[in-house]
Image (spheres, one colour):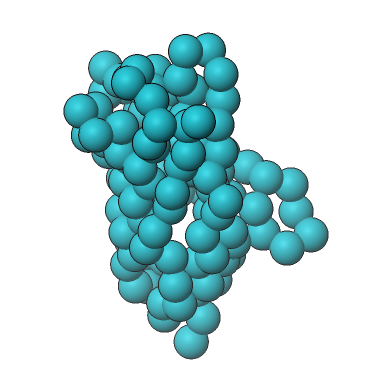
Length: 115
């Protein structure tokens, strides 16, 4: 079955950077869309960024200019380069992939921005 495995979360100081990675396995099909969502304590899960297999990207206004999403189609892997991190970026970050019209989710990786 399809599995998404995230890595790269952790603790970082305000203004710092982190890079998240997510690899999809268990399928021979390329994901049509891959992306990242996040959920902070007491809040709903929200979109961070998405990228199509053609390279079109979409970002939440709150991360534009600070985060960059990219992917390697051949490996069904998506990345999120996060910069100028703020305490309000603290959340569990979830990877998602749409493969053959079905959505899959990773288990999440914690990102904490604190001094």
